[in-house]
Image (cartoon, rainbow, N blue to C red; front, side, top):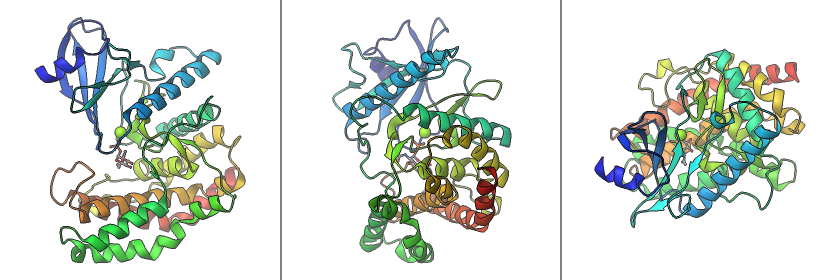
Length: 360
Ligand code: GN1
Ligand code: MG
């Protein structure tokens, strides 16, 4: 705690730190809540995972551009309560947007007062969430200047993820392949279908836009009345296919179980969440989406669940080098849970397509 306190002293925070405690469910960065003695303001302190985000300068500059642009858009639209509707970065004493302690990179943001995250949502909240992510994409469509930097190259490129997956199979670094060969077969069976976005992009039929690229339900802050305040965890916002953002929300909020549920019977795809979110999302997004993007939204749900399956399973075969785990079988359990969800999404696929046709 004293070490963490020392880190915060390098940032332009106001007041005296009271306490610093672990915060949130992130699987990549380490996050802490910083409370102050005067109890008025709180801050969020994060140690950035620099193995994953190798260009911290670019990372922070992306986030600054995104939050500035959103603030500008909200101001233009005459929105009230703007300070609670976008993140505020706290600069370090030297004005940089991070502090390097010789070993690790740190950053701070203001904690948005009276905000909550949820690991699951009701259909009503899913509708608000759909609107919020639709609005997020539409606000970022005209961010001025250079394109945003690619903070993790090929992050949601399915062809690249499959290449990594096949490399993990080939290496079998910790001898776990035989244990998971059925799942590997299931991945391979679907590989061709799952790479269709990259093919369509090369053929000039599918555009890329700025996406959040981690639209898990817990990456959104809700007000006490259930309305969405803002989208957080902006590390991976970059160019990609809209299916990424649509699909990742479905993968997380549409799962009736947990991402790593041990009881696979808990896991099914919740069509009510799908319907509400889609309605909310399309309210904003139908203005800028092309017909092919709209058609492929249900595919996004499949794709992101499949991609996550390949990522968890590859990490398991690699000996757990990427995701934080809480037990040695954690990545296997996550993989099985994602596969169960994928099967349920596949079973609901036609109904999803019919629903989309009925509302556009
Ligand atoms: C990671 O930041 P966090 O823990 O919410 C990951 C996502 C995965 C997710 C799986 C940079 O997100 O891509 O979908 O875990 N982020 C990165 O839940 O790899
Ligand atoms: Mg997160």
